[in-house]
Amino acid sequence: MPTDFGVQLDWVPHAAVDTAVPADLTGPLQIGPWQVHVSMEGAHRCVCAASGVVSLLHGHLYGTDVTAIPALYRQHGAALGRVLEGAYTLLVLDAQLGTVRVFTDRVGSHRLYAAHDGDHVVLATRADWPGFHPRPLDPAGVAAYLATGTMFGGLTLHHGVRALPRATVALLGRDRLECTEYWTFAPGPLTGGVTEALTRDLAALLREATLRRVPATAGPLHLSLSGGYDSRGLLSMLSETGRDLHTFSYALGAPGRGTDSSVAAQLARHYGAQHTTISAYGGNLLSTVRHNAQWGQGVTHFCDEADAWALLTTLAPTDVFTGEQPFELCTHPLKTVPEQLKNHHLTGFSPLAWLRDHVPAGHYATLRDAWQAELDMITVRTLNWDHPAQRDLMLMLDQHLPHVLLPWRECYAGRAARVHTPFLDSQVLEFLGRVPLPALADKALFRAALMHLDPQLVRVPIAGRQGYEPDWNAQLIGQRVDVEQSVARRPSRVDDLLDPGLIRTLLGGLRHPTRQAVLKAGLRTHLGRLRRTPLGTRVLGVPGLRIGHVDHATFLMRLLTLREADQIVQSRPAPMRRVAAGGPDRPPRPTYSAPAGD
Image (cartoon, rainbow, N blue to C red; front, side, top):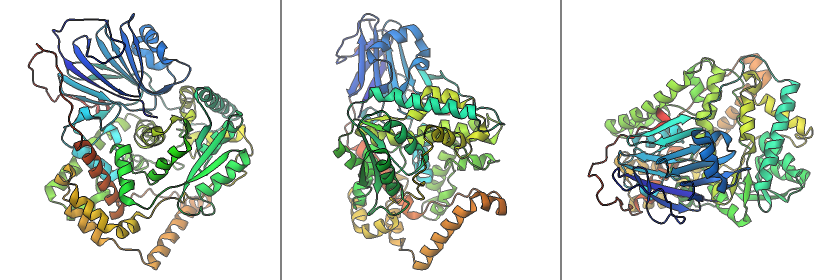
């Protein structure tokens, strides 16, 4: 359910100061030295003429009405984020003090993108907001997406456009956004384990967090249900509310035995929920790419089941619950920083080493070096923590949640409904800092808490596989002509870095795997699962973490998505710069410093 907004600000220091703010926000506002133009697409706004405060909310709050934000801001100022519970980005314009502030929630569930060019600033909740156009492509963003599938560190396709980090209050200055954490998380003790007291405490917090979100909903509750622990724990708690409960899962063809969709249907029957199985893929590869580019904005990892999210709107949901949680660390301690990074898919450009033979050396070096510089900054922040488990947890909070999982929820599920993530409640996150890190391995404490709430939680066995992933290699082979025609017909600025001839070459080299190769791959997968069982670990030791190369089919799907995302942006007219007469004729200076890299 989009609640987007965009704001353009121009430095006009000598303009007449007027602390009055128009209720409709249709004209320019003068906020201190900034002339502000606001555009909204569903954002929750509150204009308080008495206090001179304007607030724009992207997302939703629990227990706080939007109309109360100005008074709370006057009371708490820069600490406002600490007293808000919800999934949000909040912009506050203070006409009396002449300040512009942005607050992001503790996990970065809703993004705000910023581009600061000295005297001109754009803040928006979408990475493809027209105010960011035209800007050159960012090689670091292109490289990060191609190598890892994700825009880590708040990167985007556009040079100088970054997502603000989680738990941040950002104060707009002439030269930069001054970003400060209003909530600092510290990992728990290095020793200890699951105890009865911790289990009871966490169970109570999980139940309270879930029930806290139910009154904010309208109509039936919809739950994205897989065959794992997290969503079935939500299913159990939501089924006790007495509300009309609908669950949905994805499948590709008939749900196979032991797949997410098959297990989800069984769980729904046990808990009395109405279940719908949605087709994950409709068969049109270019349509799926287009959905990913339009909804993912070029900043989310490729969504295999994008077609399912398109069909979800036919269920007319108003509120969707999902089971994202931070109570999971690697079962076996990862001793080196490269292993800790790889555990969250934070690799350098090495998975694309094969690309060196297909592109000019200068282009390859540009992509490799740009992403490596970003990865180096993430690595430096990771080294602030000494213990491997501390680093693992902080990478989960700083990178995996805000840049992998939650943008996907915001951009896909959030199109149709409000998205609720009870396990990321503020009180639950505060409790996380008390948990001994060994108790987070393999979700041990989290699973114990869910079992405490419902001892019958695993009456239906845990799913063994997803079962809805399309074979993109086969799809690319079957739809090769359509893909080649689309690439030839629709050029993109990405072509300046990666010539479209590369797409034709890689498409021409794709082959269906032989029966022998399929059998070998299945055997490796089966042995890999056995290798990671307690028995396999005792006999053979802790398995190493291996990151293979990005195969050609995966690379092509990512590249096609980036090209499409850039084409969407380029097709939109650039907005007019609107500056009051008499403003200084000072050229913009490229002084934007990315908050995520500070």
